Image (cartoon, rainbow, N blue to C red):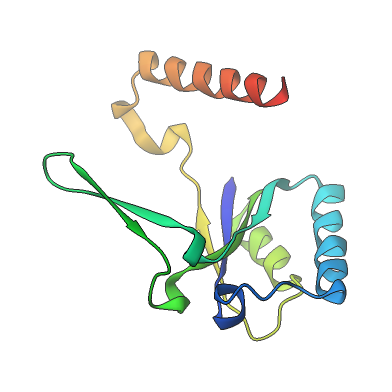
Length: 141
C-alpha cells in the first residue's frame, strides 16, 4: 500500500523561514530510517505558496491561473513523503516517529489500479503500466 504523508504548512514555512541545521539533521536521520526500512519512495519539501500558482478549471475546461500566496495557511502543504508499507497502522507508526513539534501531518492512501474495479479495463491498465514504465525510464535517463 502506498500512502502520501502530507506535512501541513505553518506560519514559518509560508514566510520562507528555512529549517535550522538541527532540523535538517533530524529530518536526515528520519529519512535515513525510511530508506533503510525500504519504505521511502519519494519525499520533498515545498517552497511557500507565495511562489506557487493555482490553476482553476471552469465547467467548459477553460483555465484561470491564480498567483500565490494563498490564505488559510493550515490548509497548505509544506512537504510530503510517499511511503510504501503493508498497512495503515505501519504508516502511522512511521509518522509518529517524524521529528516535528507543534505541526500537523495528514496521511492519505494512494489509489492502486485495483481500486478502480471494472472501470480500469485491461487496455487502460496496460496503458497506465506503460506510462509508469516510460516515466520511470525517462527520469533515470
